[in-house]
Image (tube, rainbow, N blue to C red; front, side):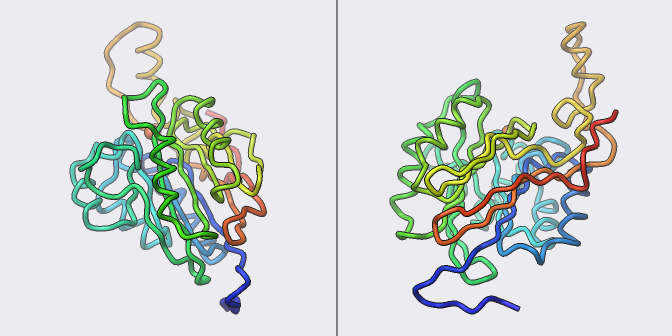
Length: 270
Ligand SMILES: [Fe+2]
């Protein structure tokens, strides 16, 4: 049953943010979790830029996630690895690419949606520039997005970046102005979740995929490249995936709680 809405009182919105879904084991873990838990959430965001074997996302992956209850899929530096994602981004605002791509890039960098309990929520993504390809300023880009968001509306920011420092500074930059700043891209869940001035943040939500791997890829080829400098093709690790993410409780624009999620539990053993 849906909570009754009062025009002056915001309902609590329970948001699930699923960390980078990596290849088939990641997709399987995400779909299995959502099959049993989707009703617990009012709104679900998933980073899906590695869904297709680690490289991008196809129309099929996007539709599978949507059918499982995911409201919005965010991208990142691998967003366009599958050409059909460029078409898909033009067809739906539910596939969000970084807002700091150059003007004219297909798709949108932010959009506002209605959660299942009737509250509105804006989702945006910015990509970092430290140890990554040059891009427009993510700080100015997110400020520009916020200018268009109605006062009091919940905002979830996916900061897709390599450097811990850049993600932490983005959270500092946005504290008190958005509901959550969730780090993605580095694939290892951090233990620094906190709430600052009503903004929930974590440096990285973690990877949904095989944890006993080199951030999703099988160890062998990566090891050969590091140790022997041999050219080897990366392949996604086989095995059972773990869902990593965070659960947020929002009230209007303010976050009331942030909790790390690992499901069904640690599976680090190789
Ligand atoms: Fe990435």
